[in-house]
Image 1 (spheres, rainbow, N blue to C red):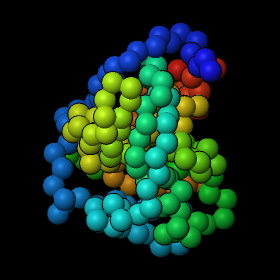
Image 2 (tube, rainbow, N blue to C red; image 1 turned 180 degrees about the vertical axis):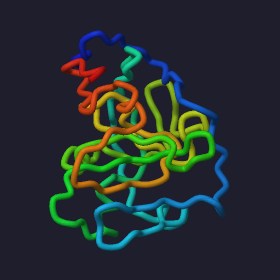
Image 3 (cartoon, one colour; image 1 turned 90 degrees about the vertical axis):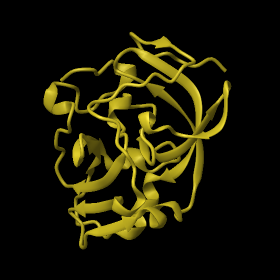
Image 4 (tube, rainbow, N blue to C red; image 1 turned 120 degrees about the horizontal axis):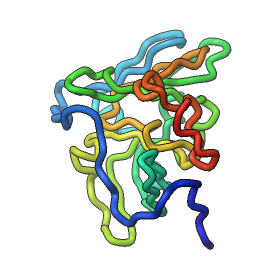
Length: 196
């Protein structure tokens, strides 16, 4: 079945590397994953806590705002929805911010997303990948090791986060790192929502 390329995109078989700031150097003893915001109680998970969560394997198409699209990359990771089992959301939570390390600041990078879009198999915190040219392998530090959030294909890839470090639950939508710099809050590649 043919895939639909979003407007203004070209298809690539490579997985290009683009990110802000330095490549994060993972040290397990210093790493944790925070769940906070509009929830009854803040939760901090260790690396082992996160890696012990149920695993999901899903094939997700990636669309980067810099105009490349990569179809059919298969990831292994932890579905976003698994983290909902740890928290009691306050009433009217409809958005989240997904955080990642940027130049040593664990909350330096962020991307805002609607909560309801993240409940399927295609919203994954990933650590392994494969495609038609690669067998299973860990994601590299440049790709976001130890944990990278890959958003559903209905969002440009900047809505993901390399070196993922936490989720903040929110009642109101709030601009993340690129959104504050003029990028679209909703970021649908099929509607070419690149800029606000």
